[in-house]
Length: 108
Image (cartoon, rainbow, N blue to C red; front, side):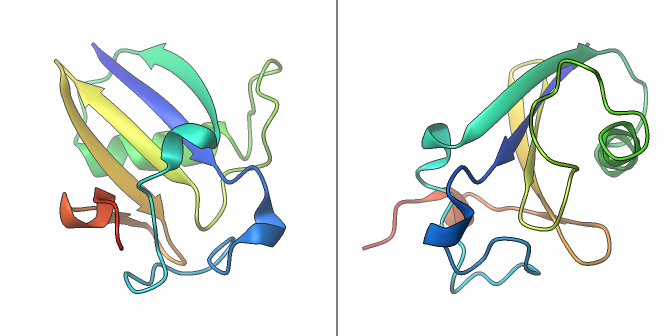
């Protein structure tokens, strides 16, 4: 079973990377827990990138009625949890960028 969370920026006006393509110099995901998140559970036997594409379709074409966020857009994060192993994907201009541990670290 795979669980996933969608993280969306709460205060879009307070960041310079909302709805923008991934830029590791501007991106700061260290405080993601302060952002909006909605969790859903699904079972899929697909690659992580295929799952991201399915989620993108679900949250743009067939959005669940209880989802309160905006359509999945650039700068949103998909967090996949496969058997306790979390991986994060940035919704980019074309497809998804896998985030590294370095991307998730607090920056000074």
